[in-house]
Amino acid sequence: MDITFDKILIYSKGPTIMAHFLTSLFDVEVFKVADDLYDFKLGGSPFRILKSESSDNLNVPPFQFKVGSEDDFSGIKQRLEFFNYTQKVDLKILSENGDSLEVIDPDNRIWKFIFYDKSNSSREIPKNDNEKLQNLFLM
Image (cartoon, rainbow, N blue to C red):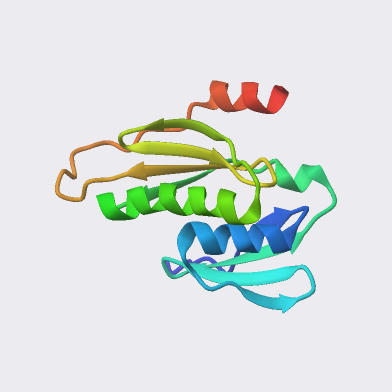
């Protein structure tokens, strides 16, 4: 079976600031396709940022990424701090420990990053804490 992603859609109330956020976070080039429509690739997967006025589209399951090097993992936090500084926003960090980081983006979407040491492949990637997430969206 040969199935690949066409595009992973990210709905946003503010696609331009979301494009800046993702450019800062992942150090990728985001291309403006049309007004309020942006494309980029991350790890070979195509993403599209779309404008949405409906908050129903914004309540998607949280993203979770495996990060394969300590340098890349620490770089994510540095880029988040730089984004906060340059855009004069304060992205909320939900949790942070030595090998994981959860942050809320400008549309209140959760992004989870887990450092995955490739040399220790027996380490299991933690699963999302659904109760914690449900409580967050009920606030």
